[in-house]
Image (cartoon, rainbow over all chains, first blue to last red; front, side):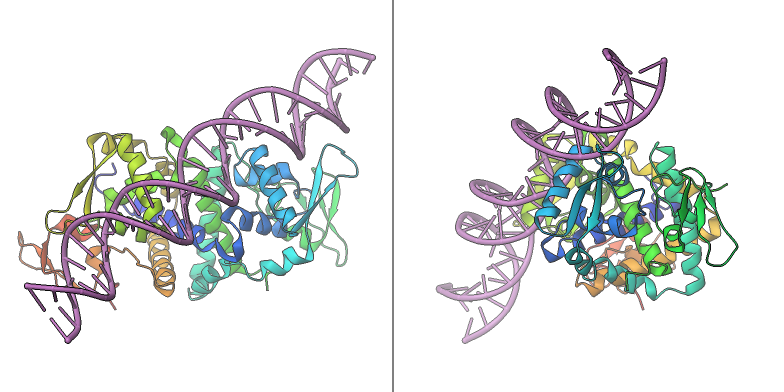
Length: 191
Length: 191
DNA sequence: CCGAAAGGTATCGAGTCGAAACTAAATGCT
DNA sequence: AGCATTTAGTTTCGACTCGATACCTTTCGG
């Protein structure tokens, strides 16, 4: 029943919706559009198995065609590059240029970060935990990909010898510490 | 420094951004667009002092012209009505039609609600409290209007006699219990 | 080796959105 | 009272997103 609107769950949903719009309106900075910022952030956070147009389309919930266009727009601005994948010549590898990386320092999302910084640290961790669960759950329920952190994946095999790489048991690839902290197309939350 | 990305604050910001996009992609249901759903929800939640195109534009962070267009689109779908304000003939009063109210029962945001329902109740209240503070703070920092609940406003004077209305000391108007739970253009969070 | 599946691109139309120019009504100042 | 200013809203235009569709190329599965 929406009519009551006293429900705490609904107020929470409305808050998240509203924060989403706050981000959306801020994201017109630097002559870019919201979806462009999300693309730059994605390329910054995604591991090497996920920096492709297809993964980005899955991440954003948009069609391949739409993503193809907006990537071209970013390329023409000199913010990223596209190369054919060396082993699968259908696929493209995306990478931020140095200008793209530099622009991320102007990311309007840091305004939200400073607001979040004012929260109590312990409550902030609780927040991260709760929202992560809600997000993954919702995406999976819709048949979408959660794009969680690599090291929280059921295929992630942690090494305990210092200096040795971790390992992805799905793709059979070694994983650095940084790899483990990035997000991955193939990630499935560990049980 | 974005380069590290281990920062909990940044992960939290990314989570909120991502939940925002989840809502955005869900909001193409019922042949409407995201901004249309936000408009319907706004009209459902706003008190009688705030159901105008100008308030909606402030709420959404869009220009008056843009809002004017999307309101016309909703009117032509028979979801809301627009009348000139009886006392200020520049202004328009917006109201959902019965079809608009009925459509809100199909609101795709309820999918997020069910996911949020799985959270622990005490943590959910903490979440509401924290996010409310972050949202109001950010909006005010940008010179925008927080649109908080009427009863959490510094101008809200609560009555303690049963059956008697509360009172808005800014507008000099009586306020029902429902009024107090709705959101208001003029709301300023109490100290 | 051939058909099916997967990654990407090109084109088109619908619709958002901001900017700017505009109308009309209310407010304020003298 | 009278005139400038402010406020609410509309209209038009151009840029751009986004989905749908058709298409191309490469890879995979028999």
